[in-house]
Image (tube, rainbow, N blue to C red; front, side, top):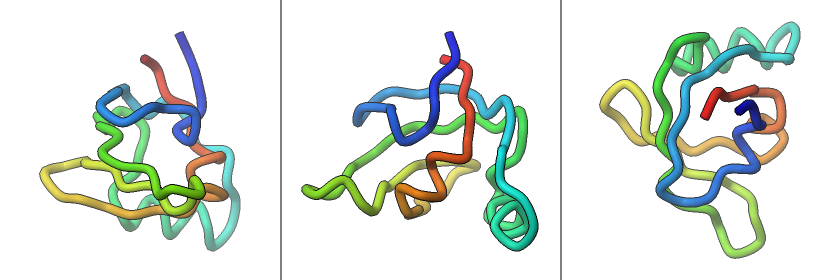
Length: 75
């Protein structure tokens, strides 16, 4: 089942399938390690839904909801 990263609940995990961002945002996500095939675990969501804390490649990363909306995951 595919869903966007921002739709995940805390504790849910999946694998990055595709990134729909372009330009600087796509480069930024790739530089942070968000690449196709990467396993991501949703850790926390802020009370108002932004930002989102995820765990990938052995470290914690905080991304904005607008960035997470560009990442398609395979659950």
